[in-house]
Image (cartoon, rainbow, N blue to C red; front, side):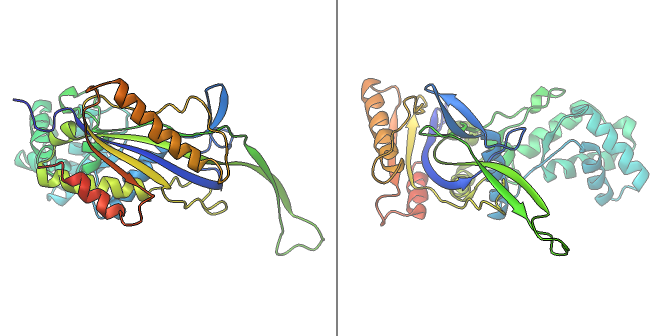
Length: 342
């Protein structure tokens, strides 16, 4: 039976400008970049911004799952709470962990860990009586009924040893890129020793930075999310996810190059059809006011043109712009998006 939300998604097209920053470092500590349209662009990886969004959701009061390689210890703690002694808890933790992972970061919710522990308790915490198939059945029942691990529903999980428990990610993030050409610059700096007995600096070094107007593209698949959550939880998920997208900023060098700039402009679309991302293949040229104004113009024009050329393929059912009309704030945007969830 087809779900009402099948193929329905929310698309966030966000423009966000930062002055001197190094939001996401590469292996030598320089701001990440990419070549797009033949020129160098500033880049923040999708993984970087996704993690900040996840952490921000926790700050907004949402219960998250635990992503860890230490699955055995995680399960053992739940067994201890279920009245196992330390030796039995560790043995059960190791037994259950081996059914899911050898040495991989895995997502689990506290409810799952508690359910596994309760299952072990029924067998007096004897690890040899714990069977993989029983664990999989328990996990499926628990994950599909709780909002205690929204990050698992949003970002998905893959368990190679138990593919039955895989969950498709409901959201997808592109790498944030500058809409224009950038050149990383170098800051030379010195530091003074408070206890120095000779004049001059005690330390010198250099740091790379840049400044950019970033284009961020995020797609939230409501159809996929609805497979895990019911309608009321779906509305709450849209609210929290949108707020986290707005608040989350990558954490690199925040102490020395504070990057706290909010969205400048966002076009948020609700679709029942194909996704549409803007490549910004031709770098934006600065005009009076910098890169932001021409980037906004390009974003609007590109989407409008592609939708006209594509007929009904993109299936737009909602179109909201944030950032220019001061009477339409973030709360208004969220409420508008929630009207599409019946």
